Length: 340
Image (tube, rainbow, N blue to C red; front, side, top):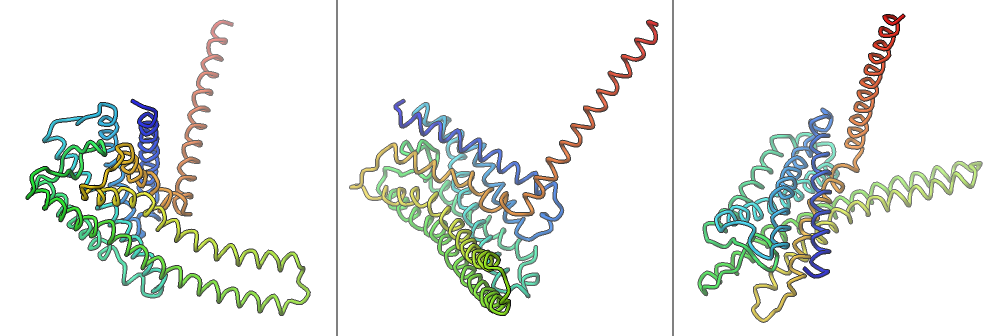
């Protein structure tokens, strides 16, 4: 293995570790906190976490083995199953992100009717479509024998066949698949989150106008207080833009290089560097490690749940320590008394 391959292996190991730990933590918070479970977006986050965990324990380690051994980590039938999972889990996670963006759009644009527009029933319908969409494409790929071990990505995934008739099927399937998974999700993310940003900026502008009118009326206000108010207005506007950029940017940054590489691969005249193929696959995997922080762990409810879990564990540990310490002390006293 050369230096680049060793670096990619280490990067993939890091992605696996971070993805497993962070997604398990999201799952623990979901099981621990009733406040999180009763929220409708929690269903989408739970589905996204489920997909990320399965990717972390199935496809990622096998890609690592394939990269180290420079070959298929299992038999042909086993590789077909892994390729099915790769197509299903990737598509399902993308559509879960699209569902989360639709949920945020309804919550911000229609705040008064959100509870009636996005209930658990509507969330279940969106998730049902996500599963049906994902299973349809992954089943079609498996039935058409369009999955297998791909040396360029060191993974069991969509694989180009040599027969001309099947190659045409592969080209058509690849274009349709990425158009209705990556491109569809990207369009939904851009439309919904940009609408959310527009509404957020409108509300920020109204708050800024009210704040400025109040500052004008308060002629005796200290200049430092006035400056802090103006800085808070600026931070509020930047915070809204930063969140939207994170949602859309993380998705595009992680998935776009891989999808573009898959499309370029369809042109026989285009030569793709073998190292880049594996790197682009690792970037797509890295979304599973980013999602817990982008959608869950940095939010107030999850921070509170993590804090409560840590405090409970510390209290239990302190209680066990005191019990064992008291028992040993009492045992020492009895031995001393008997000796006397």
